[in-house]
Length: 204
Image (cartoon, rainbow, N blue to C red; front, side):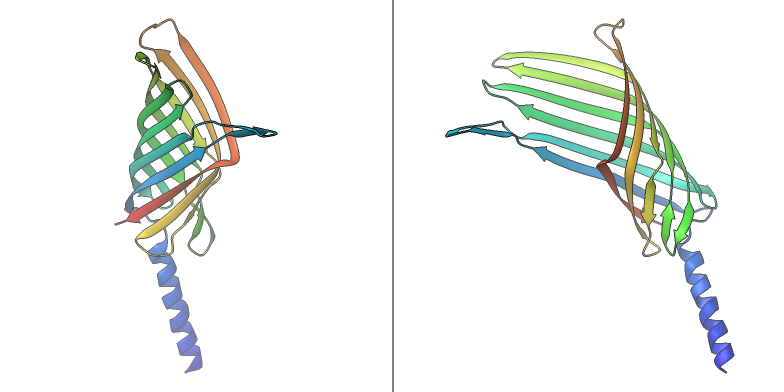
């Protein structure tokens, strides 16, 4: 009787693990979300100066589908915004939009815990606005972004909800100015544990 009970428990546990695994046909909607604020203060004796806060916001919604066990592809968008106010009514704002595709592979490293390196390629649009008193300057640019997230982790505690975090990111960006087509820029960014990306996913 004890042997039968143990075998039944093992079968049940195995079934639960399969239920939560990322299998072919699984799909989810989710987003990566980030918000930051920076404020600088200088003090020299009794003299104290403060800069106005610098705000940064990022939202990356997307839809993803597992075309094979442990392998997913997805369509991802990204919205970014940052704003910095200065003295003398000066203000600088940057907004960005990107749209593209991503792919990732899932390696199970513990029960319901996965290592999921991800690769994405996006079309990008950026706008910068600088205001000083009643004067305003605006510039726009279009381009492409190659993004690699080689240290993405996901925890899926239930069959419907998952949580992810990326601690390491590499981005290569190429942009061309709309006002001056001869003006092009290339950027390489690598972040390790400085600006982690946190995500929420709903599986259905």
